[in-house]
Length: 105
Image (cartoon, rainbow, N blue to C red):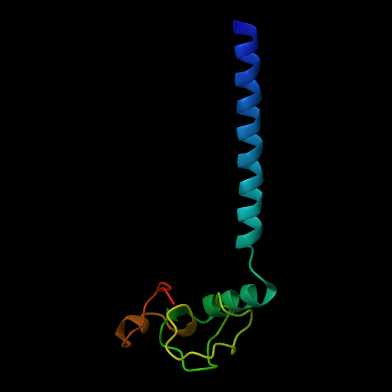
């Protein structure tokens, strides 16, 4: 393989990697977009100085979407580590089982 062919192959490979990277970034950004319900909840929480507390919900009393469903109030499992409820800022750490980060279901 001469140097011209090697250069062409390298450039084509670099272009393919760049295109794949751009596509995966676009897919990741689309997946991270919040639903209108989630945006509304986050705005409300910020305005009222609330924080998300995972693992302390009662059954059917979660405040927003989790991996198992798409809407608030649909979590059938109490104390689900992937479901949160909005609590006053600073309270979550004081609750038994409360966590500021989602856990594993």
